[in-house]
Amino acid sequence: MNTFSSSGLPKSARSGRLAAVAEAVRSGQAGWGARARTAAPAGRTPPTIDGITGAIDLESRATPQPATGPDWLQFVPKEVRGLVASHLPAGLPDYLGEAASGFSLPASAFAHRGPLPAEADLPVGAQFLSRTFSNEAGSRPYKLYVPSGYTGQPVALVVMLHGCTQSPDDFAAGTGMNEAAEEQVFLVAYPGQTASANPQRCWKWFSAEDQQRGKGEPSLIAGITRQVMQEYAVDPQRVYVAGLSAGGAAAAIMGTAYPDLYAAIGVHSGLACGAASDLPSALAAMKRGRGGPAHRASGANGHRPVPAIVFHGDRDTTVSPRNGDEVVAQSVGEKSRAQVQTGQTSGGHAYSRTVHLDEAGQPGTELWVIHGAGHAWSGGSAAGSYTDPHGPDATREMLRFFWEHPHPAPATGDPG
Image 1 (tube, rainbow, N blue to C red):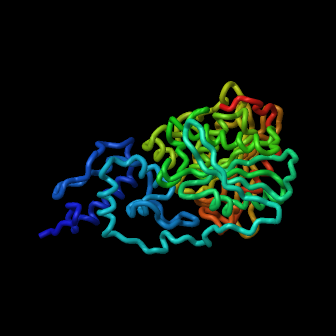
Image 2 (image 1 turned 180 degrees about the vertical axis):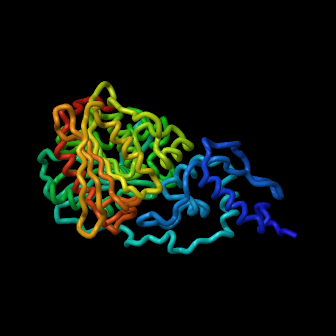
Image 3 (image 1 turned 90 degrees about the vertical axis):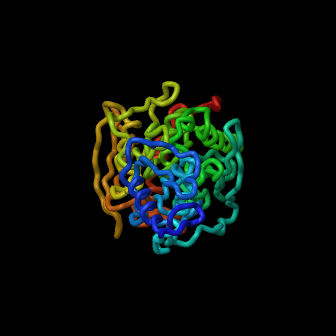
């Protein structure tokens, strides 16, 4: 006879129920089915998931992270955890936590392969400041790197948006953007997502409310950008935004919502603006792209599409490489033409670089497909999470692209 756990689920059924949940996540349907609102009473069948689109992949991540949050979240891919945790019906997390308690994976599946990021010794005269910005949409912390070479002269500003479970310090360590800023003398701002806004600190690129100018998270990121511009000598023609994964998707949103503020964007392993409007469509887009005809964005208030440099690993199983093509489609004109170059980093990945030329024959948006790479910042440091040191160097190439694309007519007053 079966014995029952404290939650009412027969212990002999745990593994079967967990397998059913995992299969539901793997198989995916068009959307959620019936949403249970309370935990299952003792002795009754627990609630089920009826269609989360996505795939569990524990092997292909370049630098897996320790599980955080409820125990059951460790069985969900990192970039999906924040989406799932913030949308599950009430009672279902408790069931999943109990069901997962009888299932284990080797610790190596979640071990961090590089050293945890720590406060590095700053160059003499440099600063890495902790700041906060608040407006009607809420409040967000951010870090600001001021290089030692900054003495009040006009400089560029690069806004960096981290991925799920990351932090500004982690992202700075992994991308090496502070080191580049010290060398080339520009400011770097790292907005930080909070656990109260999303349990796994994902930027909410999949929320329709957070894809609009002057609202939600875009208003907070733009507010941080403008706050730095007001307090430091920032060249308004050289303000840029870049991000990884959820942060890359957020960067695409910022380029579409604020084309008067940002001169160009960098999207690494991310998705196009408008790729999703809720959890089911987000997971579907991550798995296979938005699909349908290419969506071309004209930018807000009639502004030109913002030039973009896009990086994506062709073996990324967290965010489908198709999404890189869709980011490019939002940034190129209908009459653009493409030139494809191929290359190989020394001892690292091969890559294909597609440069889209505008009607005047000038290079614009670029797409870098990294062959053999997964869901990780290309050329990054093992000091941070989700990095692939085998290159090419996404940080250096993004900066090269940014400097080639100053804003033709930057914003002068509208705070958006």
